[in-house]
Image 1: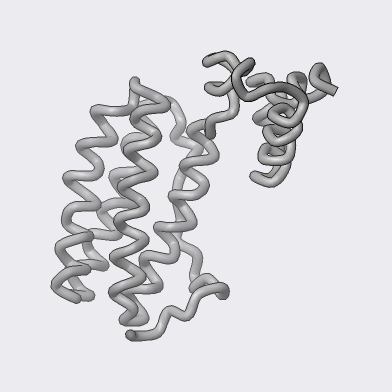
Image 2: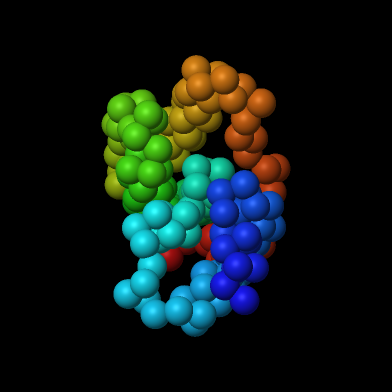
Length: 165
């Protein structure tokens, strides 16, 4: 059992896991197969989310953020902005080579978004939001990942009530 779980959790195969649930199931199986005291630091590190998973979550939050603000649900927009900052901080820790640029991105792009949200200023918000997308494209190109380009879906997510509160 433990060998099969290790195979699922090695770095190459971990990327193949299609869902968070699969990673959670594999992690729980590994933990159940041995004492928690026996996990090495490297094994624990292997269980941590990679940059692609964090960025996927960020893209969803950035999507919700836009439509929450557009719908007047400024509290939800503020929540998604704060959670986006947290994700970028985690990414900076997990991938230190990006940390300085992530800090600049937060200051120059999420900072103005936060100010517009607090002011409930839709025109300022929309302009800051679009600048954030442009900056994201620039950073992705800097790291030879210009194939990664966020595009705002033309419809709001259906799983949130985005109306004013």
